[in-house]
Image 1 (cartoon, rainbow, N blue to C red):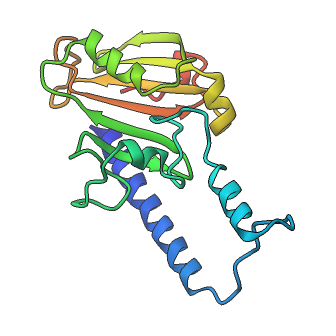
Image 2 (cartoon, helix red, strand yellow):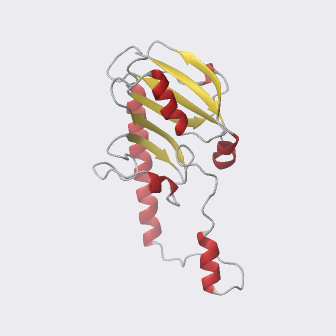
Length: 194
């Protein structure tokens, strides 16, 4: 529960910074920097600029936010601060800085550990491999490593926390909440715990 509160506070802070940055850019009197550096006609420069979209295949953790890869597969929930909650509350506390670096997910009550793990793994790049797993009283944490994430984010690890929301102890037959967070988690002692 403490972790959820911290994620919500961070999400609000980042959203506020993103909003302020967008306002600063909108009120700037400096002309925009020229992107195209070749002597090609504008039509060619525009078509090549649209092909800059990353082709790394990341649609969950590590997906681009700016170029809408995340937004193409997730529907923003306008009842909350823009960019923090998606798919009618399924994804929440979304943190991004050009790419998605952290988020939590609500799962249906009664979701088994095996099903929750399969859902979490589907959010990772195809090359992600489990590095370690720790069974704690209030959750299970598992770290994965991915070369694709290292190239996209500069961080190769993703920590996944499996939780039973509304309970002080973890119930593997009722994993109704999980979080994914990119970072450096080579050993269980590097993880924050539940």
